[in-house]
Image (spheres, rainbow, N blue to C red):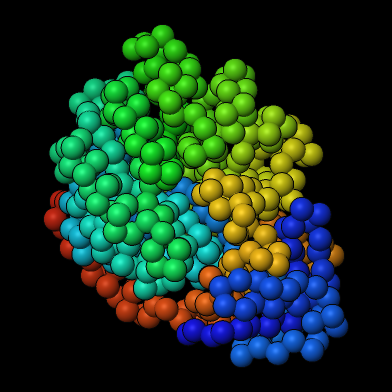
Length: 464
Ligand SMILES: [Zn+2]
């Protein structure tokens, strides 16, 4: 569905602009790919548009931005629940992902994007695409589906994970030169394409799978190409041991030494940092993608988000993946981000609903290098907009819509999603994907994948 102009009328607008204005009975005008006016409905009453969307009883806000997504893990949702991290990786996730075909990669990406759109995500950062998932097919899927996405190619040159050497599943191992060549090819082919919606990044594998020399080479390559980097850092305490035992450094000393700090880096998880680490992250404006659901499910620990916010470390939110979360619903993730730290530090004032929503929108825009174009509803920005239906028992009564959204809401309340001025969902119906066929194909591919990998997942209770 392509339209030249859209007028969203009579909504409850969370602008997320510098003043954080909330406009009751407000309207937003979209012309082409951009927002051209935001204001009171009576001020925009004379505006005409090809598509008029009545937004009474709806929140109108910038789309959610998920800065840590594994597209390939949607297909293995629920395949590694309630197990230790080592088993999670070695017995299930790596084995399943290490048996992917390119068709699995595309099917999983479509399933993941369908869920993201349905639950209000407009932009995402995919952190690690293995060659076997088929980068081209995934990029084509993003182009077709209409989301804004940064796709990161896996970069690695060894087979360890944190302080465990040589433990990676053979199907997950990639050759260094092949990784770099593919990134360069995909960058030329896709970066800035699909009306500017696509980016190609370097997706560095975790500590233990990349040598310092390769970290340094990639940092230089990324900066030459003016693209960005992402990697898991400090998700597990073993990361801290790895840099201490091998290099006599802390996590951010190691990152600094290898040119990894900077506003062009997104570190996923970022849990096991000491005070000096946090200061280095703040000084370098390195981004953290906070993944509360995944961190709780895998018992990774609590990222020091209250301190990060105080020290002005840029924090955004990520849903991580199907076996670690197990949803790609950023509204639920925002709720967790606003809840878990209060209990951890015994203070209900830390990480407010407003701060959590800032992380999910403005923080995400910053992490993706898109602060000038998305993350808020302002004239001149790109039209990445979501509408959330508040005509619902769980949203009643509405006193502060931010509270309703963050503490009472979930992605199921999302009614309409617009990306780059193009509607991708209207009245909860996906427009750029056939939901039934996405689910049918995912079911078929997940069954075959489990069979190929020799993994049998059954309910833990007896089935009759
Ligand atoms: Zn991850």
